[in-house]
Image (cartoon, rainbow, N blue to C red; front, side):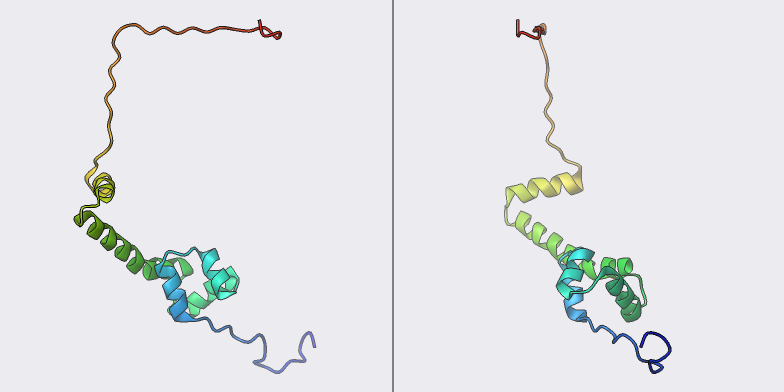
Amino acid sequence: MAHGGARKGSGRKAIQLDKSLFENLCKIQCTKIEICEVLDVNEKTVTRWCKEQYNKSYKEVWRIKSAPGRASLRRMQFKAAEAGNSTMLIWLGKQYLGQSDKQDLTQTGGLNISIEWADENGH
């Protein structure tokens, strides 16, 4: 029955999402599209579910639930640097200390530039 014939309160069954899985996907920085693909739901469903479960927007929930993952990654990067990983030391220096790979080039003498034009026959 299309309208009116259904019992009051009947309708689409509420979708139950795995809260722990959702939070873990956020923690490893999955995008909303990736989260939806793993949970096998559309973006509207995950947005509505976040509002129901957390009383916050998806964006707010993702920001909060993804923070531990970023902190964990940062902790591992600093541990790698402390262990002597020179690549990580350089990268962290650039990110947090304003360091950069500067190369000062000095030109001495003249600069000769030659431009040759060819006609449509290549001459």
